[in-house]
Amino acid sequence: MKVLTFAASNSKKSINKQLAIYATSLIEDAEVEVLDINDFEMPIYSQDREEELGIPEKAKLFYSKIAYADAIVVAFAEHNGSYTAAYKNLFDWTSRIDMKVYQNKPMILLATSPGPGGASSVLTSAVNSAPFFGADVKASLSIPSFYDNFDVIQQEFLNAELLNQLKRAVSQL
Image (cartoon, rainbow, N blue to C red):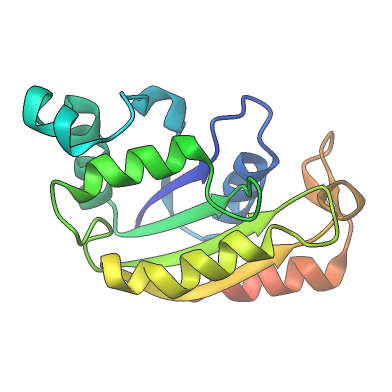
């Protein structure tokens, strides 16, 4: 199985990227491709820019990466209760190719934050909207207080219950 994973964050130190990579390591016999959305930076989407420039090649490449995958794991960072601007811009451009951005792929949606909310606001938004954009959401999970529950040096969960929940989530793929 080819699994595409990325953090919906442009932070070089993204805890959501750590979570996404860890989650995909739990999938047996998976060929995992990790994307960095910094590689897909484009001008801020607007109808005027689209008419002037057309669809950027980076949006087409992102769309083709999704097409190539059998499944997708995304971990969403939360900025002020919503998507990061970097992810939203990439999504907006890609949706101009096809509104079904996720191309009916099975998906696991994750989110984490340093605080007790675990980026649950953005995760709820993603879970509720993703099916409209061609996602087959199999499971979702918010990880609260990331640094209390995950050892970033050893790259392992400290909280057995959250680890079990994550294993159950990824087993849905």
